[in-house]
Length: 131
Length: 131
Image (cartoon, rainbow over all chains, first blue to last red; front, side, top):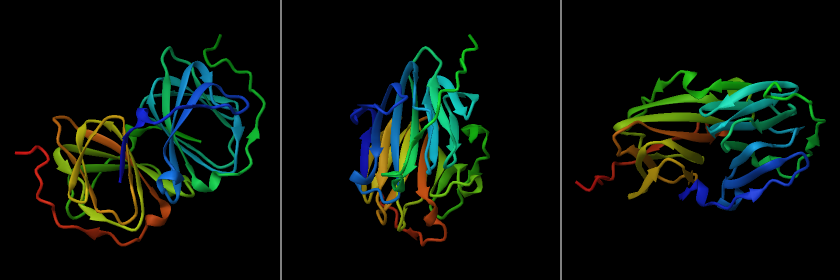
């Protein structure tokens, strides 16, 4: 059994094309012996976002802190603490922090995601604050 | 894409042998089209606990609120908000709320858990409060 403080695990910058001001911590993964899926924590600074993209595997997400939007294609859906999100394989998606504090969420993926194709999508041009 | 308030999803009593005062919400699962793993939220009342058992599949857990202990076999390990836990397949484990408020945690399992054998373990007789 592994028991750890999530925030004691190293946060790495997400340097994927289209990402801005976000980090990822691998809380549980294959390195721990996890046989099927991995739990990561993303921290997104105010104004930051994850890449707008799609891939042939799912996400299961839980919002721990903060406020933002989930883009379902071009549709912005508000997010806050306590929201759960399921992104189907091949759905175009992106998460943006529209609040004043860090937005934190868990994002789980199957181990089979490793090495799979990720397709970057064009920015949708929506201002989630309506400005 | 599914976006929902976790606490708007129905909480069902956990009626498995050895469970006390806990409920489960299936936040994301096969019913949503999740192909690989399921996200559940457990709420455990003060003094309540999950069953003491083992099974041939893993858990990936994140503590959302409250205080308690994780039993790793007979060893009690303290838990609080922001802790992450990986339970390996076949490890004997149990989670108990030793605090004064509801303990809430996410617990994810592979879809392949369905129908797998669960083995109830004898209670370890430890008082996590040391009384």
